[in-house]
Amino acid sequence: MEYVVIRSFTDKATQQHYAVGDRYPHRGFANKERVEELSTVNNRRGVILIEAKSEKKAEKPSKKPVEAPVEAEVETTAEVSEEAVEPKPERKTRKKK
Image 1 (cartoon, rainbow, N blue to C red):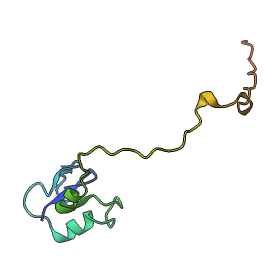
Image 2 (image 1 turned 120 degrees about the vertical axis):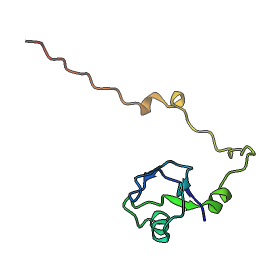
Image 3 (image 1 turned 90 degrees about the horizontal axis):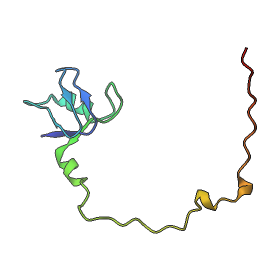
Image 4 (image 1 turned 180 degrees about the horizontal axis):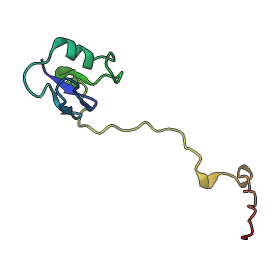
């Protein structure tokens, strides 16, 4: 089974660097224990680094544009009343010696 890298890492066993989107392993077959380690949080970094390639295809978003839901108008900085803005304190300047 092929796996896809979802977080970049360097394989401690082969010193091979894998970037996001790379196929794991680059060559040959991967050890089941190593695949289990990289596909769970039970590794040195504590994060999932690879996933099965079939899972990666299922997560690809469609090419159709998605419209964002319309929300209530948000108050912009220009609309904030002057009462809400606190005046800055005056800075004291030091005299040079």
